[in-house]
Image 1 (cartoon, helix red, strand yellow):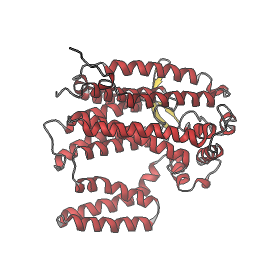
Image 2 (tube, helix red, strand yellow):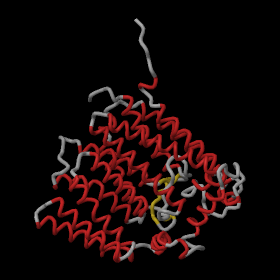
Image 3 (cartoon, one colour):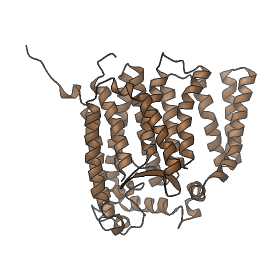
Length: 409
């Protein structure tokens, strides 16, 4: 009897090949942006070692027994909370945020690994005894799981990473089956706050839209009034919250609304990134031949602004190829999340998708000048061992789920 064995049935090459492609392109961009920069000497070698190590960790997690992910959900979440506490006490301040912990010569960001803990435990908790996410008490429990690490991260303070946690939290809750009204209740205060950022008129328009939505939902007067008051307060709280931000964070918001407000300060990177991408043209200036990159017009271009290296040296074609590789990853993750029958595993995959997508969207937006500069790396490409390792760990968990997807346990 002949048995047909299809490796694709156990290992998802459609997902793995684009990831490896992005890592290789990222290494090339890091090399280009650091080769003539004495201050960044050794960054390429360190990232290469981190890539090899991360791929090794990936395969270790890939071959773990299927129950390992479920068993480790709560311990990983609790351990990540301990790490976030430790960084507040013992952390190292970098760019105004106390977000790094050093163990000997090795430094890492606990928040990168806290994302993994929250995705695993939130997915586990939501699917424990088939909770009803539309129940106010159980919705509050899910929000609490996310709010704890978010508050700890805001204490560092690291606004960019906190936004990532918020997106992950809301996406996993949405995927668990929350009603349209529940989504409205959770999202509307954030929308009100964002509208207030752009002035009084947008805020008033947003409040009118809230009233219209409440009318169509036809809830009782008490609940409708409470929701409206919360939205009203969210808008007015922006000015207070803005004053709590560090000066460099305030400048990032101001220069997002008007990059020319401080072209040689907070708005400098965003403006130069657009110049670099635009100067690449259709085919680019060629590897190691980008003026903005080689003459170091953009500080530490190998981290948050690595995409403009691609735009300048590989042009429109290279930029589109990178985006296409990400889209393959996102669409594949969405397809897997939709087809996996186990709600716990499906929740993990959608959480991983949210984590990678928000990094991608904000980072590319930073490079194009359409989102604030909030210090989020581009997944698999930006320099940083902690980021690459955490991305490969969550990817390995997805692959482990894929390998065991036909086992109904």
